[in-house]
Structure formats: C-alpha cells, structure tokens
Length: 495
Ligand code: HEC
Ligand code: HEC
Ligand code: HEC
Ligand code: HEC
Image 1 (cartoon, rainbow, N blue to C red):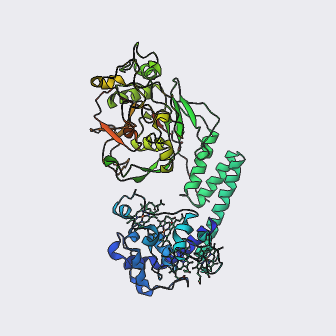
Image 2 (image 1 turned 120 degrees about the horizontal axis):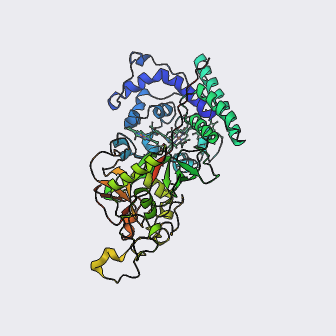
C-alpha cells in the first residue's frame, strides 16, 4: 500500500508534465483532449527512467481512451521501447473494448502468483537479471511502471512531499482504526475512520469501515428480528434475520461483483461483469401459508387433500402483478421495510454463491438431484404415467427439503420458478437503464426453472420471461430487501 502510494504520488507529478502531451499524441483515439496542448514540445521528464521515443505511446492505442492512468504507468517503463504493450499482457480485449459501458471483462487479468507465471515468465524466462529471483516479480516491480517502488524517481518537490505525508498519515489512521476494530472498540474506530476521511474524503475502505462501525454500534434493523450473533465483518450487518411478525427468514448477501450470463445461451450473451449492492434475500421461496397470511387467500393449484404439506409448499399460480400487491401489503405492515422482488442480477449472484469458480460445484446441471426438484425427481407417485396429463404428473415439494447452495439458499433452482423484478430486456444488464422500473410495461424475468422442467432449464444463467399478468402453476417468488440506509452524516470541516 505504501509502495503504491509512493508510486502514485510520483506518477501524479509525472502526469502533470506529460498529460497534455499524451492526449495530443493519441488525439484520434481519445474522447478528451487536455486543455493545454501548447506545452507539448517543451515536455521535460522528471524521471530519468524515461528513455523511449515519444511516438511509442501510440502503442497503447484504443486502451488509452479509457485507461489514462494505466497508460501513464506503463508510459514510464522500459516496456514501451521494448514493444510490450497493453495487448501483449491483457489480450485483444475485444468485447471489452467494444462495449462502451464496459461491463465486459478484459481477456486476461492475471492476479497474484499467476502474474509471474502467465505474464512475466513468458519473456523473462531466466527471471530477474538483477536479483536472480524467478518468482513474484510484482512484489518489487510495479506491473505497469516496472520501477522498483522502494526507489521511486526522486523529485524534490514540496507538492510531492505534501502528498506523500498525507498518504502516510492516512495509512497510519487506517491501521489504527483496524486495530480498534480487532479489539471491538467500534466507537474509537469510528472516530479514527472519520479522521482518515478528512484526509482522503473519497476513500472507499475508510467509508466502508465507518459504516461498519456505525452499524455495529446500532445493530437493530427496522422490520427485522435478528436471529444470530453472527455479524458480517465488512458491513457490520447480521447475517441471518427474520421478518418481524412473520416467519420469513432472510440471509445477508454482501455486495460484490460477478460475471452474469453465459456465452452459451442465446438470451444470456455476453457474459459480463456487474456490481451488486448488499441486500437481504429470502432463504426459502414464499410458502402458501406465508402468502395466505399476508393476502388472506391462496391461489395455489397444489393444495387440498392431495397435498397434506401444502402449507410449507411454495405458493404458485401467482402473477408478477400479484407479487407486487403482496409486497405492497407486506410493506404497509412492516415499518421501514422496502420489501421487493430480487433483480435478476441479484438472483443470479445469490444463486451462483461466489462466482463462476463455484458454478460447477453448485450447479444442478452436474448434480441436480442434490439441490433441486425438477422433472427427473418431482413426479407425483399417485399419477399414472400419462403424457397428455403431463403437467399434472409433477408437483413442487415443501421448501428446504434439498441441500442449500454455498450461501445457504434453498431451492434457488427447481421447485418453483421465481419472478424477478426485472423487465426482460437484452443484455448488457444495467440496473439504471429503466429495466427495474416497476411501472413500465413488458415481459418480466423468471429465474431458476421449476419442478416440471428439464435440468438444462435450471441453469443459473438461463433467463425465462413471462407477461406480468399471467398466472401459472409453476411460478412463485422469493423475497428481497435493500439494506436500510444509514442516517446521513454531517461532515465536519477540518480546522
Ligand atoms: C470504452 C472504454 C474502455 C476501453 C476502450 C478499454 N477499457 Fe478496459 N476498462 C474500462 C472500464 C470502465 C473498466 C472497469 C473499471 C476499471 O477497473 O477501471 C475497465 C477495466 C479494465 C481492466 C481491469 C479489470 C478488472 O477486473 O480490474 C483491464 C485489465 C482493462 N480494462 C484492460 C483494457 C485494455 C488492455 C484495453 C485496450 C485493449 C482496454 N481495457 C480498453 C473501460 C475501457
Ligand atoms: C507486462 C504486462 C502488462 C502490460 C504491458 C500492461 N499490463 Fe495492465 N496489468 C498487468 C497485470 C499483471 C495486472 C494485474 C495487477 C494486479 O493484479 O496487481 C494489470 C492490471 C491492469 C488494470 C487493472 C487496474 C490496476 O491498475 O490494477 C488495468 C486497467 C490495466 N492493467 C490496463 C492496462 C493498459 C491500458 C495497458 C497498456 C497501456 C496495460 N495495462 C499494460 C499487466 C500488464
Ligand atoms: C512480451 C514480452 C514481455 C513480457 C510479457 C514482459 N516483459 Fe519485461 N521486458 C521485455 C523486454 C523485451 C524488455 C527490454 C529488455 C530487457 O531489459 O530485458 C523488458 C524489460 C523489463 C524490465 C526493465 C525495464 C525497465 O524499465 O527498467 C523490467 C523490470 C521488466 N521488463 C519486468 C517485467 C515484469 C515484472 C513483467 C510481468 C508483469 C514483464 N516484464 C513482462 C519483455 C517482456
Ligand atoms: C526482490 C525484489 C525483486 C524481485 C522479486 C524481482 N526483481 Fe527485477 N529488479 C529488482 C531490482 C532492485 C532491479 C534493479 C532496478 C533498477 O536498477 O532500477 C531489478 C531489475 C530488473 C530488470 C532490469 C535489469 C537491467 O539490466 O536493468 C529486469 C528485466 C527485471 N528486474 C525483471 C524481473 C522479473 C521478470 C522478475 C520476476 C521473475 C523480477 N525482476 C523480480 C528487484 C526485483
């Protein structure tokens, strides 16, 4: 962290000299052209690490349009002269470049030990000529700038000194705060995070730390009963809760990013990265008795003498519009609630429970019977094998009978298909482009597949769609809720 800070400070200084010139050099591939292009021919390089022909910057090509900082980092390295450019290490990144909103991952982004093995070792086969090290190149060489950050270009400059001391101060505040957190002294930690934010107001780690402390000191959540001592360490929120005056249990889903979609499915292309905020999601599908309790009716097909366990079975034959009414009534009962359906992105994130690495493990397409009720295991015993009565031959089961996924959600796939809040619109998924509007007309997304579906319909990435007023015996719902906002803090201005 300190090394990075030093490097950035040095780069900042360097940037001040070279930005106008870089932009000028790449004029045809840049959106923005820096204001002061007059200085371009008088550029002086503060660091003697710069030993390449200026024209070589062109190699950064289209990447320079969006990644100015990375280009500058790379720009002071010997790799520019050695014709090792963005694409050598990151691949063509075609989908990523074409997508202006850019939620498609670049082709290659090695992390940790893979960096040496997959990138540096390709060309520097015998390791570091200076230290003879063959591993962890990135420990000493910044991956773009290459300089050894413990010996940054030394520019004696008061602005640089100032920047550095601010960073150092900030980092020591953060360390102090983390120590307080470790000893559960959240009040002290909050005060120190506050000081850190005075130094660098936009820092996400400090902001997150501060929010976590506030939540730890005021643990109650309106409309929820906390049913566990277990607190999530990054958000400070309880991991398991119950909706007040009801038996709907919900689990915390800490925010993050994941790759939604699948390049192998027509409606789910391309696979791309989306950010998910922290939210709560129902551990089970909403049952018939939970629906009855809120709505005073039970529309389900699967009830009556044939289904003695109907109370615990998921409610079915509800339309998307019915779900909205259910939510409206639930919200009017529970103060400060804000219950809603999950977005399709939230649904897929929770279903995958930790990213594509886990897709194989938690995927019912590989071992469906352990996790899901679907066509192969949900036939009703009493029903003869008559194909014209196809749908009657299968039925959902009480919720929670199968193994949960890695994040403890039951029946995400199979059993009953689940309405999501989202309009069925082509990818890329963007929660802010109107597709989450409750009042817009159009088909809505249904996820997870149901009891009469084949295994392939249960793919976590597969998007089904339905008109919002249609009621089918295979569609039900699962409850979601945002994390209640913290009261706005008023900022104290530094003396
Ligand atoms: C249209 C703008 C745009 C273009 C052109 C572009 N990128 Fe990106 N790139 C982004 C955005 C936005 C992100 C995500 C935010 C971030 O990490 O900066 C990103 C992220 C990345 C990441 C980091 C991904 C991660 O998970 O942290 C790499 C590596 C990357 N781009 C490489 C490239 C390369 C190489 C090129 C040129 C071949 C390129 N990009 C061209 C916009 C662009
Ligand atoms: C020598 C190989 C190499 C070259 C050349 C290279 N990169 Fe990278 N880049 C990496 C590696 C390795 C990482 C991952 C760093 C990490 O995880 O710490 C990375 C990370 C990134 C990121 C993620 C954000 C960050 O800074 O951590 C972006 C964006 C990026 N590179 C863009 C570019 C662009 C644009 C170029 C061309 C100007 C470029 N890279 C040239 C190896 C390279
Ligand atoms: C496509 C081949 C290629 C890849 C990949 C590559 N390099 Fe290089 N690198 C070169 C060449 C060629 C030179 C210039 C000749 C030399 O100094 O060995 C160079 C030079 C360097 C230098 C000295 C230049 C300077 O500015 O001081 C360092 C340090 C370095 N590379 C580190 C790395 C690291 C770390 C990685 C992995 C993140 C990496 N290289 C990946 C080809 C590559
Ligand atoms: C323990 C720290 C350390 C590690 C790990 C390390 N290097 Fe170096 N490397 C250095 C130092 C220090 C220099 C000299 C830098 C200077 O003179 O500015 C150097 C210089 C280089 C040079 C330039 C040599 C020259 O003749 O100028 C290359 C190329 C290089 N390293 C590649 C690598 C590669 C590839 C790896 C990973 C396999 C690696 N280094 C791992 C510390 C390290």
